[in-house]
Image 1 (cartoon, rainbow, N blue to C red):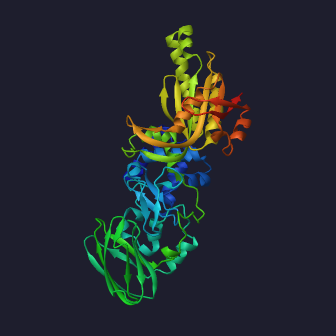
Image 2 (cartoon, one colour):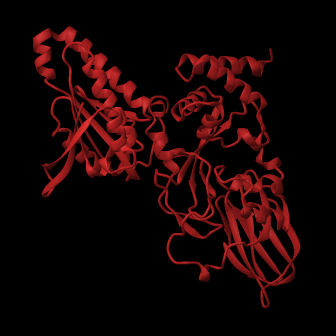
Length: 474
């Protein structure tokens, strides 16, 4: 057995022993790592892997996260352009996601919110298997440049990619600190000079009156100038690379309409995407919180999520229980109750954010998952000895992800509402707001769990007027 194979076996054993997957799942994953193409091992989606290998989304996400923790995979965060679906990488992880980015290709603003426009992709570690994408300075730009630039969830066969590849006028590399002249002939029109790995983009307007030679500085994340005029006919582009690892470069006609002809506002995505792991879904995965608590977010202001479902629980009469059966036995029951809650949350793709006395706060990527978890919690805790009963509250809406005591936490009106709605619940009762109840699949989830519901009006502290709530019982 080679050193690399021996190391991989040890890493896979660590994945299995830490709960990252069953033995059969680990064995299939090992075969995949050995036999898959370089393209298949670059910026992988655990959701696509789940569909191909018969796993649930949660099982695949847990497998990929445990494999990353064991050094088998590496993950990267990318902000997706809403127009072209370019993958604006953030090597600094969560901390590097910002609110004010711009896609140099489309020249549109890109918001760095932890919702559907943040993609988390996984690549095999070079310690396990070296693929050509680990050495970007050696890549064939015409073959791989667009794969680097665009999101992996955008199919390589899309008409836009095919159009760009078909019309590439020049493809090559320039090393760090070097100057290179590109001599070509341009018809009147618009062109794009792109360094895909760094998202450095120059827009050229070719026509009469422009200079026959221009100078371009390629820097990490931008080209200077970002837009300029150039003559039509024989021209020279003088490139000066200022990036440490050099740059692969593509030159092709600009397929997008000119800025003055584009509709105002943020363009809507016009491409059908493959399933991918969003930043919000990763943050609400229990395995991520358990394994990557050191992943930090901006220290000032936090990160905005457009929608998160927050769940609070509390134990009925837990103080009286300690008095009734004694501290030792009561502590054992409460510990078993916490284990049941954690299992129910993780099973639905959620994460326990924190415990507060005998209560928990949990987060979920969508209301349907939260409702299924709430029904499971209620059922499992009621089956424990000691007459334990939960009171559960749910609300969904925008909130802010922050770093508190070296852990990810959430703040905002949505969190406050969820906590106050939980305060309305009685013994073995789940109370949710209309924002949860009217979301896709929630009423069906309650019905499948055998819950009956009734509508009510409630007054919450700090909230003006009565609000509609839904009360659910087994």
